Length: 197
Image 1 (cartoon, one colour):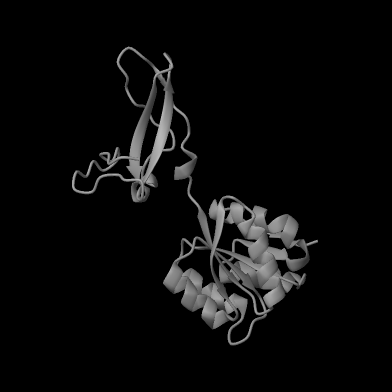
Image 2 (cartoon, helix red, strand yellow):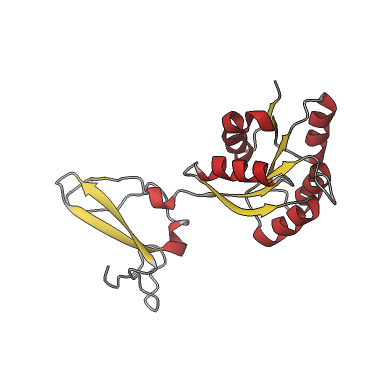
């Protein structure tokens, strides 16, 4: 890609290049191909569907998949095998990115402050601080952060404690491969997802 003026910020001092840019194509009714060039940092501000006026032609705009928001997730569990399993489940989803992993409650709170993830997935029973206490602290400092509890406990008392701590979801570890993605998708929408068989 040559240097182009960014189609979003139009910053002439910082043109779009092959290193910092992306290209969005659209089709016009008369098969004219055009491109809009954006900086990667501007892509998030750019509407996924937009209209670009063309002389004597109506534009049929394609959705820019590059501008879809990636959900950033922090995972906390003191068992390395569970932590690895959860990471594999989440990283297999194209809209998710695991940005951090913690081995105890204190570490989870510290990483949440440093990384500011969209979602935190917490085990209940962890050293130094329980998942419930970590959830309360994360919720108080970052009210927009969605929290999903991943636990081996089916007790209603645990589920109620998760709600009280500010969690959006609660699922069993044994159901993680089937339910975790759905729980996170619900949580980022502000919906609850409490499923225990």
